[in-house]
Length: 485
Image (cartoon, rainbow, N blue to C red; front, side, top):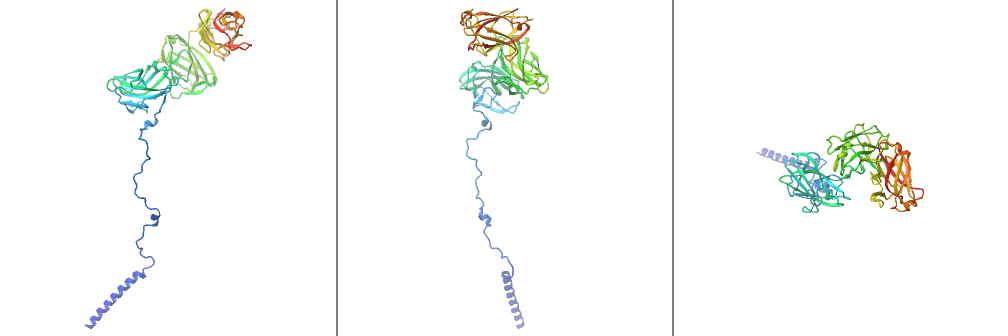
């Protein structure tokens, strides 16, 4: 028993000793790193605390959101350019959608009494026509143009008949003569009317109508194929021309031919290549040409020449016309073009030529006190009057001029084709002591002009007026000319 008790005591002692060793080993025998006491968050987190939760980022306060198109709408639009219908400044009962013929938008879903308004800068005025690009799968409708309000004064009306489909666009042109006297910035309302859905509207453009009897600058087109460029011309101070002309290029002009009677055209051109042809088409590019002419090379882009062509088909053309000039039959580059002009029948020099029957001038036509007809006045040094004359078979070697002058008189210098053209004749008109020395006292001056005898057929002569050796601000008045053999 004793022995067993001792054994138990020994086992207990050993157990206590082992437990003590184990505890000491944990505190002393496990080397180096103490089991880290719970630590604070890493110092990097202490130095830059994690941001507290924030609200979703907010945009800076702005004005009420605007639709993208509204950001690009001009406040004032230039009447000289095409105006997109969706670029209105005010509207009612209209919608927009993508165009089926280009990359723009169109007005759509239009019903009667809807409207749009446009602030348009009409400059010096003179606009009297409008073109509207539209499509309609219904009977269409009309647009009333009104001034300052949807129910304001009526300026003009445009009829827009159905085109046979919402994707079948056409351009309609209408006269709006009441707009001609409008200038500067004007607020115009386009008011829509008709039954049901009316039309989709793409763009509109206002036009001035050039005088068909005057010189027309080629750069003053109302429409042109992309690629036509406008450059400064080397053909006089401030002149411009169109260039970059290739085969099948074209430009469009709106011209008023009045009562008609035009039979000839003059074209001012230059070309460093072999040139090419140009055609005149009326109303549409698809119509047959009423004239086709050749413009040869001039040797250099800076060498300008004037070419005259008969266009007998034009004699019956009157009123306002869409005139397309179509350029063709050349290489990569055809020509540069400065201006063109239509002329009526040449004046027959076998008959008296009235001085006021010029085709262009820097003088004035005014009543003549001598015989109840008109004369040209305002004749000062450097002014001119140009005449289209028919010399037939030629031989006219004498000239009589009926004129008056209380001043020292002056000279008439006749140039062929232009003011810079060949001088074919020069004559001097009297002085203040002849025929009583008064503007109303007319007399005749007779000249031998053998230089004129060689002229045959139709000719353009520029009569340049200049001072005689004795300086004078006003030279003379001229009533008429007579050419004889």
